[in-house]
Image (cartoon, rainbow, N blue to C red; front, top):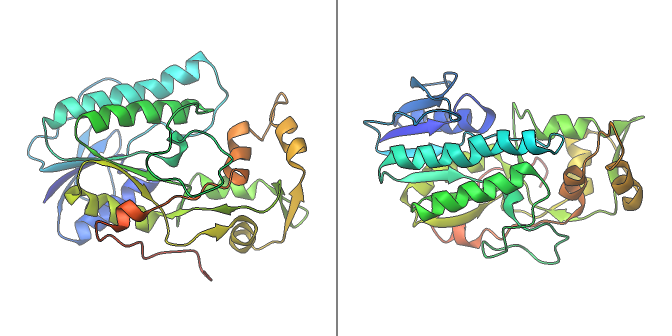
Length: 280
């Protein structure tokens, strides 16, 4: 298969591109920088439609990500990539199959008392990232795409989750807000296998995560190699409102809301996640 992969120079996109090449696909990496394999076609998602001529399908991972200081400038920057860039991609695809990688951040904020299915509301997000990913996936779904919603993607070379976790270590301990909670995580290998399997799935949204419900404290402690201690949730939320803060409301929610994804819909296609944290 001839597959166009956007965002292939990034963490998740690079793993998808390598996996596609390993299985014998002809890979075209779309983005401002080359991917790890295949042909490179320049694409600036903020300005132009991508050239995907000759490709049979598209896996779209390019996105504006992160949790920067809120404001109009941030909102515009995220909108330009996650919403306008999606519209450009859909127009260029001209009906070719699209797998559009979204995020569990599109779901209405918790706390959550039960696993989330794909029917959970996707509104009231606290960040520009969540809002614009939700808007972008609506465009993708309207175009007949398969939309994948992973949560907290981790793995070798992760530039987002692990650096955030390392910042909570002080005095040989990991300081986490609130009590221990269950949560879902997504190994980048599981996301990559789902991206390629999903080229054959019916259109719609699918949760993607490891096939285990982790306990936050054990997972964080084992990854960082230090014991976990708790900070009162009220203190953490107050700290997230201070000028010059290192905590944000979103980062606190990520480790306290108890988000567990129901992956039954994806499992129903025959896909299986094969990677999980060591020791689980």
